[in-house]
Image (cartoon, rainbow, N blue to C red; front, side):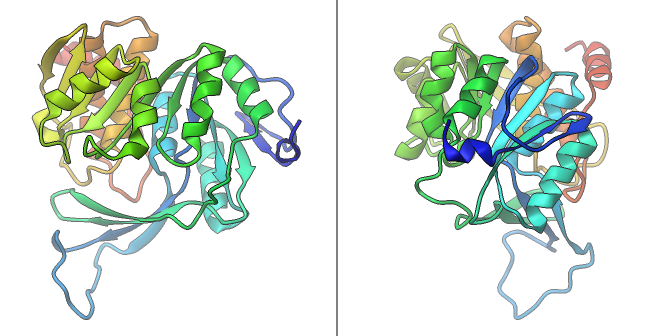
Length: 324
């Protein structure tokens, strides 16, 4: 066992403990990476014109919840047994992340990060669009998940959702060896950045935003041809999503938000969570994407300063009501 394993902090649902992971309960989805804190700033418009200062009426607030946190939150709300593994600092930001998982009943294994907990600043415009500024100093090039911890959790898991944050790429071979299904979200990949290639090629389910893609269909087909992906999903916000499976590209319309759109932050994570809920439940890909659209639409009605996700009962009720 590596020395890092001895310092790994494991917080289980309903029973917080500290120490090495010796026994892992059955896990539906293991979420790797993407834990951190966002500072939310509501701005009068985006892009924000230069000025010496702005008065922020909505306040400036820090809350736990980056991509891995939100995926874990969404999965847990849908009734899936979820475990989150990532690096966290011994700092106030790390405490916020630990508190979120404790309060939401999500098992968390935190590897100590001397560089501190990941953090970002999100500028949110009146229409709900956001601009994220990520602090990439909260990590070290040689960071690796403790192998014993990773293998133990992977062996107990049905599926792993891998964030593209460092050092998740190095965990992919261990997950593949364990035989778990793998999904990842490439977010606003441009289709060219080589950093994303390992994630795109090793995952069975690949999510990507169309935001930076000049030709989404070509990129989706290239992902499927070069890697293991059985399903590729390109989310397009209010325009819905595009689904590639078995060589066929289809469009999935966006769902109508159940309230005013206040923030798009976390919508893609909600989509992924609901899609995986459907997939692990044996639903066909198009049905999974419809679930994703409903969860993503709901996420857009949740203020950026809050952490909330669509429940299983609410998702199924809305799916039945809309014919999805």
